[in-house]
Length: 81
Image (cartoon, rainbow, N blue to C red):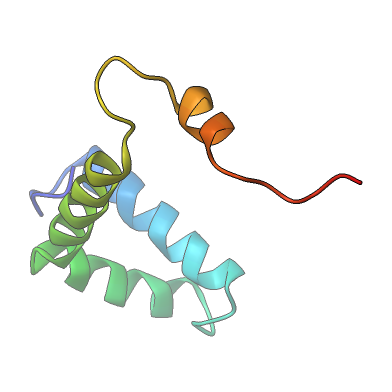
């Protein structure tokens, strides 16, 4: 989907990105959101961002054999007194 190859998957990605930009108030219209979204996909920036997020997620994952809840329980939280 992030390869830049034309087709329905790319179109869906671009429309979703343009919609997100529009909701965030950045472009004045859909066309203004489609241009930067297409550039990000076509230039490989969207894929690079996804890879960065995935690597960050992996680095924050709990150690093998534990669960996220076990790790959260071990951290001190706010006092409830």
